[in-house]
Length: 138
Image (tube, rainbow, N blue to C red; front, side, top):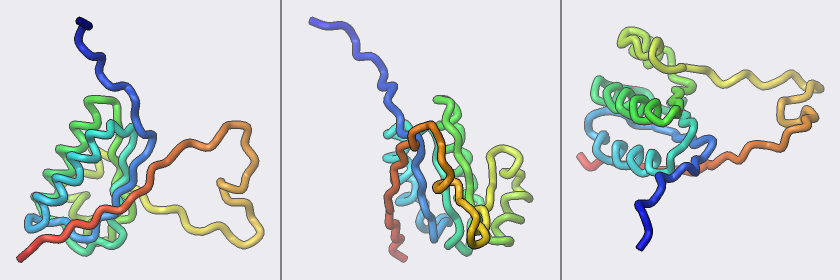
């Protein structure tokens, strides 16, 4: 007989999630996606809100919950590219003081090297990309 299993230390370096609808009606399905995502033990989660037009208090609560769960394992949750209206909502809720809210960098001018094209001595980080489609039935 062997002793108890050691906790999983393997983590993904980065998981990106794009959300287009983020309110109470789709919260159960979105929460389920986040539960599955957190089971992968990611080091960093980026929630892309560039295609999202609305966010409500329930969605903000879910983001805070995901943030807390990630922080327990030294993970980081970042919100990327919210539209100006959602940015104001996040600011009013003071969520922008708890977790990073960032914009995608504008494209480089022609003829300049992008970070991916610049030579480096370090190997590239592994990044997991995926899509999750969440639809709520009304």
